[in-house]
Length: 291
Ligand SMILES: [Ca+2]
Image (cartoon, rainbow, N blue to C red; front, side, top):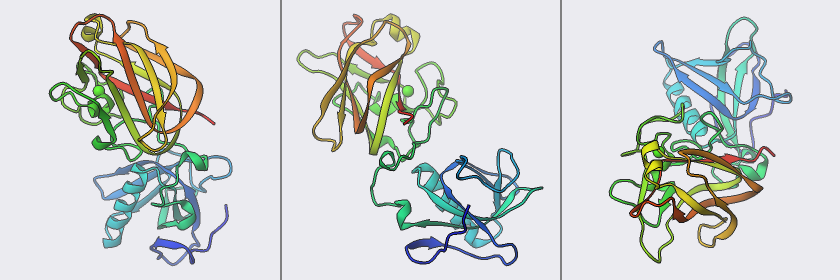
């Protein structure tokens, strides 16, 4: 790994600490923890070309919150992690203890805030849960307003289908709090095709999805039977990508015949499994293509 100059193009850098010349890591933060002691510990995405010179372990990088500026580092890193931003982290190499962070930075070429898609750069979204869901609320820059539907019943809003919970249980180990009842519910109405959608706010290459209901709702026949996956790059014009006929099962996954690049994924529902009144999805997981 090369030490990069931090001059032109630098939008944020805080450098200090005499002593060992720091190495610079460039990539994405995968894990971040704040210990009771005031130590902030980090792990980052590593591969053969981009490896930390630190001992192996869950938390190879750390810094202490005892300085006023380190609070700002923490804010910066939290935001970077939540938005999947590429960052630079300067650190002192070590072999027998966690590496100490020396500075944090982003550079223009890292794409901060310029709206270019992570997928376009070959980067990847943060994956959650057992299968790698990229659509969980409060990950990858997604918030409640990223999700919408053309209709919903009472408090059973679209965002509740992306909270990692069904009505009866948590289904994603990385989930935070349940949103309302943890499910999206919509009343059947003749002449209206219900849909639910997620706007990633950036280009994503999608390869598959998972539809989960609680067992009771599945037995009632509220689950989607015939669906169409639609894709949009601008949030306004949508193209049909693939039609699926689902099984009457509370938990099923489907792979797209071909992966598709999109910004907004919309799932249209043409029919359910017989419930006269409602269509329900408790959780909708979306998976990214591996290349
Ligand atoms: Ca849910």
